[in-house]
Image (cartoon, rainbow, N blue to C red):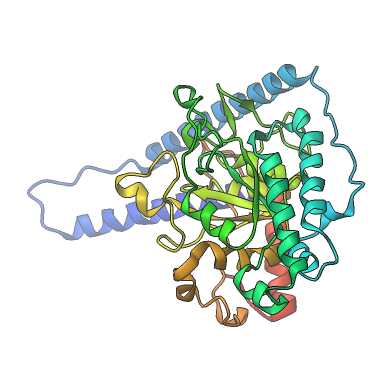
Length: 388
């Protein structure tokens, strides 16, 4: 890593010297009333070198200090592992659960109660759930089971009209769920209760899915973690003293902890993508205008409207497409979700670092290695040459 930065720095300095020499030569060819003043290139380069060295030194000292402070702060906070999974229902994908419920291999009540029990088990450790409707969810599960047993709607029709019938889901706190608090991590909103469902929640419920609870976010969904003065901090299930990301961190955490098979997030600058990455699940930020943002707090204004989107989060990649199809509603046809994608026709780019900025922490070797594995896989498996 250091060698790469030094090589890049050497190339930059070489180009700088060449540019200065070119300017000097061009300058001498032009008519001048007086001799041109010499350009002291070595002094300029030397000054830039010392400045770069100084900035890097300051950054390294700050990094070492922050690491020490974090270690000191968390040294007496041992990691509390989550209880092991004993109920295999918790490991099923949302699609698999929907199929088994629809074909009477599982009852919705059994599935819903399994996830409720898991949430009660994990929440004291990770603090991901902030408000719930467990009793209502069980009643809705019973209604789903009655509908399926009645045989009034055949399996094929149910699969088409209610693809997630009887399957539980969750959503981040900033999305309105009728009867539950919609705080968005803000103290002044701590007692506010939603009067109707957000559009995305309503679409999921129309597909037969059953909402269990809402999950923690950062204050006004503006930060890269999920901590606020109303509900406190959500802890990473893999390591309690690490961040779950934000602002959909509670949602990423509850799914990673097997408290929910899938759920709703929102993203303006990484609020779906970072929690998905930090918690080891899948998330997708759709294009603007595909999924409705109505019913979300805070409301994006101005230019932010074109960046803020609502999207799916789930433990299995196979659930992304069917969930997005439901959430998109009448806009689903714009995405060509049923069209097969030829990955060899796509263009691939990768960025290993920022070019070696003196005040920016270099990419961790593990992340760099993981990225290179993807590049190598594309090359060996598909003959795709990703461009750096």
